[in-house]
Amino acid sequence: MKCFNDIYRGKRVLVTGNTGFKGSWLTTWLLMCGADVYGYSVDIPSKPSMFETLSLESRITHYYGDVRNKNEFREYLEKVRPDFVFHLAAQAIVSTSYANPFDTITTNVVGTASVLDAIRNADWQMTAVIITSDKAYDNVEWIWGYRENDAMGGKDVYSGSKGAAELVIKSYWHSFIKNMPNIRLGVARAGNVIGGGDWSADRIVVDTIKAFSDNKPVEIRSPKATRPWQHVLEPLSGYLRLGQELSMSFDGQSRLFSIEDQLATFNFGPRAEQTKTVLQLVSDLARNWGMNSDDYVKITGQVPFEEAKLLKLNCDKALAYLSWHSTLLYDDTVRFITDWYGAYYKHSDVDMFALTEQQINNFYNEAKRQKIEWAL
Ligand SMILES: NC(=O)c1ccc[n+]([C@@H]2O[C@H](COP(=O)([O-])OP(=O)(O)OC[C@H]3O[C@@H](n4cnc5c(N)ncnc54)[C@H](O)[C@@H]3O)[C@@H](O)[C@H]2O)c1
Image (cartoon, rainbow, N blue to C red; front, side, top):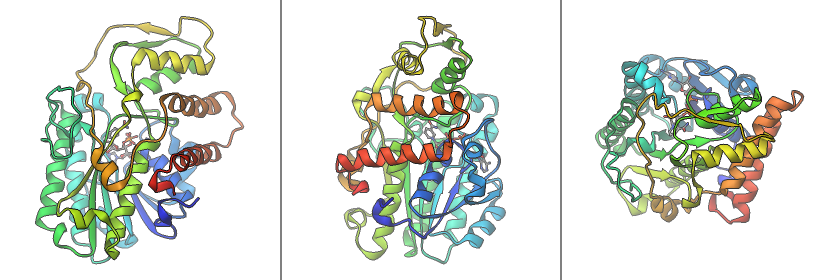
């Protein structure tokens, strides 16, 4: 597959959090782009996991380490000497942040500082993309989309940890990295993602598919809540596109660096059309899954923990500088999900790595059809 102008072909790419949901999809895509992938993660965060289902450990060079161990991470980075780093390792579950607030803060804030500290000591050419979240924004509950220069904040611990990580990134960039000619650094903010291969706790698609695969109704607590549902491949296409553009700036070929002397921070969000209620999503998943009664959903009305209300991202900057916008329509997003989990739960003989590659290929072909720049 030739995409992102083949910038990742033959390159060493280090992915932290590679054993997680997004990390496993990113690894598969990078392998398809011809990259040599290196991983750094503390554990495999779920059982089952996409990482194990796709046998990713045998396809890459993987290392089990805690990102909070500054020296251990630095040694690994210096051993690998990657051309690209994608930092995804995090405590990423909102409900867990209520159970383990302190670990969430150390992993998400100190862990990010460890990565940046290793980067500031690197003496080779390297491009790094740090993944935070839309929840890093101070959510003032307005109807407009948040722009990259809006204030950081976060009232719950997970959101606060992502806001704090952003401040750490900004200070490292201003104090050290912006003056390093061998380093390019970018920050990517995206919202909740859905897709096959997720088994994390307290995520609606995961709970729904688990229930349907046992032929049981799914319990939902806020049927009318709306979310901008986006497939995991959407922000990943943004992260890879940002890495490409940052790296092109080493040869003076980027629009990004001639335009601004700022940290390259980008939102990657879905189109407005993707916003649907939880109930709509569950009923579309049920239809595709072949659930044949109206009893596929049970509304409990119990909200076990507070979560930030709808946050909308303004993605004009990604469109202007990266020619990036999202690819899939809502119906295709839902179909990708039921196809993936349907193969996993209903057909034990399917090669899930090949099926994941096929979904990435379908996504790429759709982006190409729409003439989105990264796919040309
Ligand atoms: N999934 C989403 O909807 C979503 C939305 C916005 C932002 N994000 C961000 O994207 C990134 C990936 O999310 P995900 O859903 O794939 O998460 P995940 O929970 O599936 O995976 C987390 C990964 O981080 C690793 N990790 C956790 N603590 C670590 C530590 N101390 N040291 C080293 N590795 C550690 C885990 O081993 C795993 O590989 C995170 O930064 C997350 O905050 C995710």
